Image 1 (cartoon, rainbow, N blue to C red):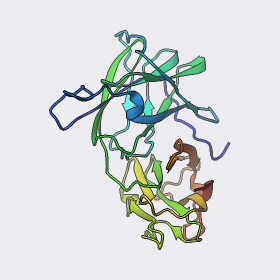
Image 2 (image 1 turned 180 degrees about the horizontal axis):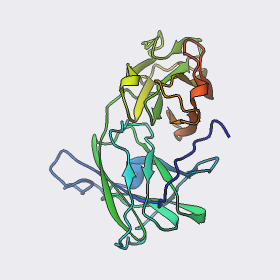
Image 3 (image 1 turned 135 degrees about the horizontal axis):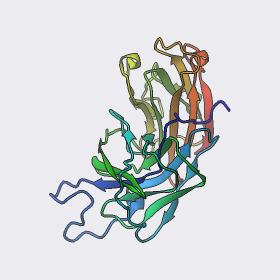
Image 4 (image 1 turned 30 degrees about the horizontal axis):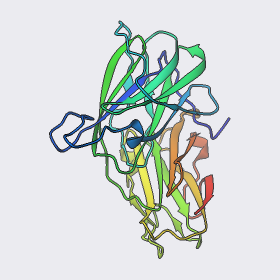
Length: 298
């Protein structure tokens, strides 16, 4: 089913995502500083999405209070594949997990030093690829240590450094996983279209403030960000599109580029949209180009 996020096959395992904020006061990541109140996981992550290969949809993990079941150290080790990823406050970077070589049903996401956790469950066991997409809150610290594990597996660590971008009343973020020319387009209520060839600021203050530029020179995860500053976003209907402008010379007909769009609107839960492109989808870009991802009213 085209337009739904799919995942590479490999023997894998669901994971425990263990995320700690590195404070500037000399404390360990996620550690409670003198005079501070204990943080909750929802202070760091707005939500966590999860999907497996051949699923035609993703699931949102359930927030739980207390501590998750203990992780038992075993010979199997989960593998995290996200080298060079761009992590954006308010964005959702896909994290590929596996392989480790045994069946699993349940995964847990936790933040180091914070209370509570997110949990997701498969309907049936699977020895295949999995992808987590944590949506990072807009006001979290700039550095994290990502630790991934699962029942029966020791931790695997992934250092994360956030790239600071513009946030505000509305923030739309696009992340994708391969060297491809992909453009994020957002049309304002006035009809003005913000995208890499018209970065703004628009008359209403909307602008594309982060993008790869010559993206065919980047072989790895990439991101683009469009936002309206607080108090500037105009009321009305918005259109979000993603355009596959170039496949950067990759000609294999089933070579997919996978993407996630995160839409943040003040006062609303972030929305995620997963999808993919194949080389045949290339349309060379321009005003009005691309696949419509969503429309929303502010």
